[in-house]
Image 1 (cartoon, rainbow, N blue to C red):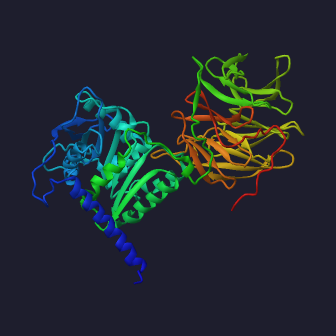
Image 2: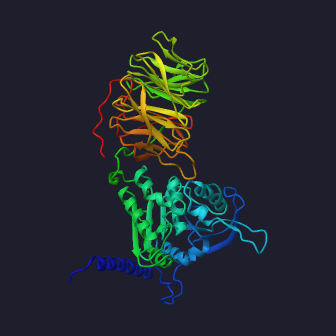
Image 3: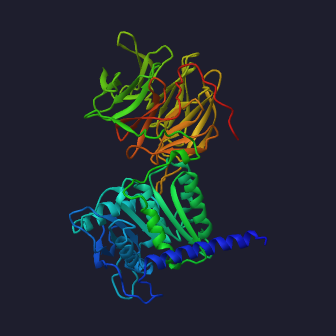
Length: 576
């Protein structure tokens, strides 16, 4: 018999359905199909409790707590946060499934926290409240994760011993609650490791259709995700749920995540989830307490991350660091705005004072003769430090927030006047360009033929051709940055380059890596809230140094940086 692709696909969907149904009936003998009485210790459900949020001002919501019979207050318990409250949990028959799986020791002891979305109450019976479900659930960003971590979980933790280990926390939801669950774990993988997503709304309601792209481009995170959907799910103005869930599964698989799924034939309802719930929970908690981890060997994107290499803080008390410069040996120097000083890292990787300053420093860079240049923002000068430790003026009437130096000139940005310019050695003159946005970060391409420029208030990066005399021409927006959800700009800052002519740009979303054509291929996680400066350094120039939230960090990566003031490096031919 010859199976058509349609018949084969339908057979696969039906097999997934029967596998889930068999497991459900095996593990949950309290099913109404049998009319049996519960054979397992039964947990209790407490609530509803009312929570008034400050993170979502004016909102009120109900939440319930499922406490398994095996809960021991002397031991930190695992937890499962479920969006859409008790109604969703009962629609899945989740309390009964938890009773049975915990009793069979198929999963650990788990406290369930079933929380509704918020609403701002109406003032009169004939008025409607403001429903926050789509705003809270469909929106990206870290706000909902903060609501859970700063408000709800601490409140529940006052009554129950909840583990704060991300490996002990799971989060789940259906439809908009599913993308909400995934987004909370995505934003805070340090808080949640296990995600159950059913009929997930990864479509264009509030930007969720970008998630699959971010999954492919972002540094992999230690998450385990189970997806469920049916081929008769919604298909409306915002997108096709069935296709979007498959696209998310493809992206997670491509990026090396621990991901599994069951596709069925149900529509936008809880029927499919109810059938596969035992199988999904068993898979999410398999091998526990073994930790959920990333699998870089399975990531198919740029192999820039080295397994086991994380951001390492280099502490300097009482300092607010700003700019980094690297010499020919790979030694790292950086400025302190509070202490008005230049530091360097010694051979042990410790920060030591290099030069005390009497002015507020701006841009910092070495020249081809090995001399260190620094901008004096107070007097609007660019100075260089000679062998005797004395400063000499190079350029005046310039407040250079950033510097990039080559054999043709000194390139600078002055965001206070929207100016971008170059001091050329040939005519000892300053040539300037005015931008609509505030230029801030500068970096020359590996072959020193183009200047990349980031802006404080733009959404794209600029590229300028460097002419033979060192002046700039043919400027255009070139690099397409990803913008954090709800933000007007990418908030880009410092830029650095590697030998492959890839640019690394500090941004609010992370360190965005663009190829030679200006397309973001990869996004490094950052050690804090806002990275502002980047440079490659170290003996092999394979350590990425960053300033994030005014502090210095270092991380070895699978790339090698270049210095613009040394001879140019020829990059590979760009791939179209």
